[in-house]
Image (cartoon, rainbow, N blue to C red; front, side, top):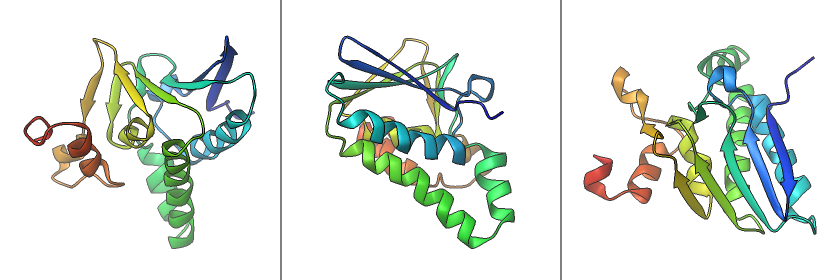
Length: 162
């Protein structure tokens, strides 16, 4: 049985949507990306939802993309699988960016790499005192992919981003 990668509850007009891979620090994989699109579709036009709040189960918002599932396993399937995985990830981020209801990111714990995509897409963002932001790709001497570098500069001042 596959784990439900996204959980949500609705209370008093608020859809509380959570990445639900706490054992992986909520890093995004193809299953989570597909499920996020389904959840966004399901909630957008519900009368009992006025705002969507996005957060992560456990100790992290998102540790970015799942290196094993998103990259290595997808790359082994060829270019078509890579493009499909990218489309699914960027698709729900784009959908969130232009969502029909207000969206709020509640960043708890780690927000690394690919976690910047949905953070940027939300209308508002709040970070817990213990939240940590990083682009870990720089530790390997490579540029972060998926527009993460641009997102950092758009969300922070240039000096803070550097």
